[in-house]
Amino acid sequence: MGSPSTPGRLTVISGPSGVGKGTLVATLLERHPRLWLSVSATTRAPRPAEVDGSTYRFLDRERFEAQVQADGFLEWAEFAGNLYGTPRAPVEEHLALGQPVLLEIELEGARQVRRSFPAGFQVFIKPPSFEELERRIRGRGTDSEEAIQRRLARAHQELAAEAEFDAVLVNGALDAAVAELEAALGLAAG
Ligand code: ADP
Ligand code: 5GP
Image (cartoon, rainbow, N blue to C red; front, side, top):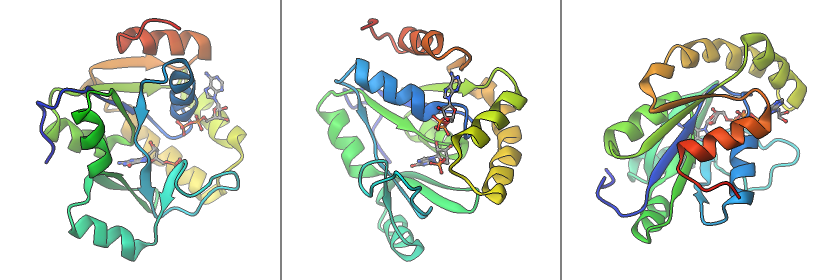
């Protein structure tokens, strides 16, 4: 388990698949280069534009499970048929250096991090409506129909959990959502 007394701040960004977490986080990183985003490991197949080690470390199930056994993940969870996890060591190293750390993870992982880092800050991103969420997942054009259906089914559970979070933000107009996220994280607008 990580220590909640490490000097950097740990922020979790969560919310249903397709809500725009990746888009928001990418904008935040451009505007605030001091932030460090953890690169997760996953057993999901890479999407066409994804490069190993950049968006994710792509592992087969055997390697992923070996890393679980070795206590190599700060948290991990199964999502829509694939495993996802946050490698522990780089997060602890960046926190120890006092650098603000971002994790972009789903609900079960957010719950695990809440237990190990109770001093962390957790933000839930929600869509303006469920219909808009479905439009965004489909509009992204990266997932099979089966993957879309699994993600939408899971989204109902995730949306029911918003009250667990320290801050809740609607990703309607992107600029407004970025500004709200900056305010929630105490980041001066760039
Ligand atoms: P997530 O990381 O939560 O799965 P993405 O960042 O991949 O979501 O966004 C899903 C789709 O929605 C992408 O096509 C993205 O361009 C689009 N999107 C993100 N934010 C907004 C927004 N505020 N308004 C309209 N479309 C958005
Ligand atoms: P995607 O397959 O769309 O990239 O991600 C699916 C879901 O897994 C998203 O909600 C994303 O936030 C989440 N996710 C990505 N990395 C991790 C991780 O390391 N741990 C957990 N628990 N969820 C993750």
